[in-house]
Length: 349
Figure (tube, rainbow, N blue to C red):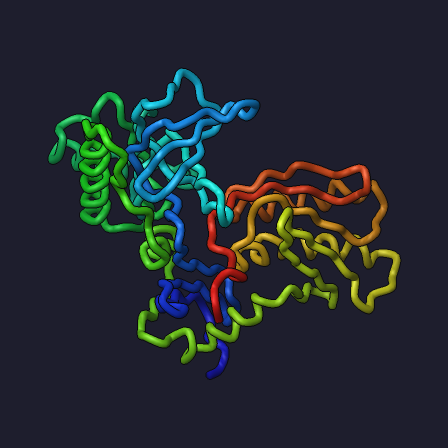
């Protein structure tokens, strides 16, 4: 099959795992694969188990195994609390959770403990913002009557072009779910809300217009499987003939930048800027997170600010939370990335 132009979302399976792929002009831009551990977004009623001395954290008991909560204050063993999974756990480790629970759908987010009605800052048109506020107020009036004092509501960027009826339905569904969960008086550990799977996440987060293809076997019939196989390799070709090697280890992800055949004086900075632009996608389609160290090609120190600026711009548009830590004494660059994806290397072809 020839290269398909435009944006396509493919919903299929990899073995017995649900999977979703975003292709743009024939290139794999994003990949979501179901994991075996609790998915980010899962909400539990958990029981505090034991504190971790020196780390300021607490292990919690849940029906699906131990969870770990950082920066605990005023929590004693035996206490019950609501928590939400923030990212995938490394094999053999407790899954990380937070007490800052958020209920998120395609159009609406409900934020317990952060009251108020807000519109995504990416929507700048005042007429659109006014229309969305009116839509939200009408939905709330038809549902709970008023927005509860302890709940906040945020209308996401996808609402800018959405049907008002669909937005209202989404608002009411999220408010109802949040009120039900937050008022749950249970006294035993329980899973209250499942995290979204790849197909739901694709609908929720890949909100730009796209053709949706959901036939069984569509990964194979539309060359998506070939693109995924390419992502299993460690090499990504950059513009200008340079390339990067992306190699996950037990401790961190190592990224090496190579200038290829270019031997000019500007080869290093050109390859490094190309790497900065390509790195978010290279990590995203491989499902990589945690500590990341980039060994950039040799370049003058004065050019580091250009590379760092390019990194900041590239990761700003990436859905996974990534912190740019900075340069090491040896001239490498360190990043810390949320483990929000199942690593592709853990999934059988």
